Structure formats: structure tokens, C-alpha cells
Image (cartoon, rainbow, N blue to C red; front, side, top):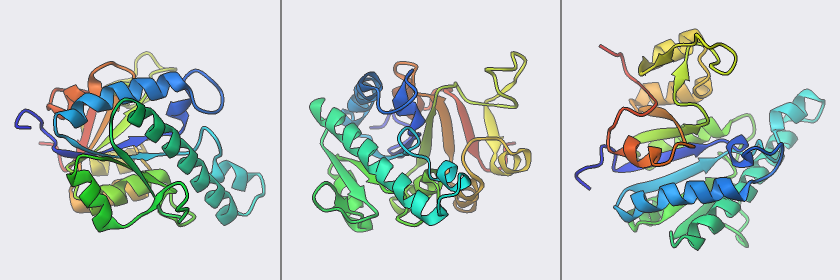
Length: 241
């Protein structure tokens, strides 16, 4: 364990990341890729928790903008995260990684209820814990869930998995001159409106000194390299000197 820079992490996955190249749903190849990256770090002793979004199945905010009641739409989005969590659990366990899904909305037939001390105990025993159903409350994103759960379990870092290799000052897909940041202070992320996580999540991390590492999950071995402190992606933390 001495070689790892972070000993306990929370991995944040967007629902869209699970789609792969499809326009909807879950791509089994993405689950396979994630499982093969997560397995060796868990076996090496890193404690891992995961929060996954639900945007590949249902986006509550989009439905609300089309006229659906916002709270109702958000609850539907939470249920989508449970589906993703179960799919990820299945993939991890087929790779021999012991996993627990803990849901903020009780559904004991498929997931344990979220209890903070029980979650920490699972993590201490080397199980990957997947936090499903957001915070259990409407109007909060899975970004905010990730920040909240990471603080509750005393994680060393939030690892925000994306399809790009860090945070840029513009969209690198449309602007070839976009500049990548190696490090960023929280306040600059907020002031510049950079799309790292939502403002509530960034503020929670800033208030509690929890670093956020934004990295490309599609590059093989990136999770392990990031955990070992190699310069992977962009790190968001306190004032950069």
C-alpha cells in the first residue's frame, strides 16, 4: 500500500460514460473496461467506493425542462442510477471483486439501505461499495452525492472519470487550441464556470479540503497510475502555489 498516493477513493462515473459509443443504455464493453481497471487496485489494497449517474437511462433535469414535475423526474433519475449500479456490481463480481450496492432509497430486494457506518465497514473489509439513488432527495445531482459520500467515508480523493484527459479552458473537441490545466484551485473552477462538477459539489469539496482528480477513464491503467501519484489528468484542490 505504501506506493499508493491515495488509500481510499471515491470513483465518480457519469451515466453517459456507461453508454460507450451507443446513444442509450449500458455498453457491456465499458463495464468490462472499468472492471479490469478497478480489480487490480482493489487487490492491491486500495479501498474503493463508486457513485454512478443515470443519464444514460433517464435525466431528471431534462424531463423537468419538458414539463414534468422536477421532484418526480429526479426520483426517476435516482432509479436509473440503481440500474447502473446493479449492472456495474454484476460486472465487478464476475471479475472476482466483492461488491455491495447501497441505495439511498430503500429497495431491499436488490440493494442494502445506505448506512454510513455499515458502508465504511464494507470498505474496510475490501469490498467495493457502489452508492446508488443519489442522496435520496430531489434537486441534488450525483456530483453532489459523490462529494457528500466521499466526505462521509473519509475518502482521500474523488476520482472523476471522464472521456477527456483532464480539465481544459474550452471544449477540446471543438477547439484545438484549448489549454489543459494540470492543477486548479477550487475557486477558479467556480469563478470560471469550468465543467468539473456542479457548484454544490465543488463548494463541498472546497469547504472540506477534498481534492478532485479529473482523468480519462478510457486510457488503460489510468486509475492505477493516478492512485500512485503519477501526473494523470487535472487535480482540483486548495490554492495552487
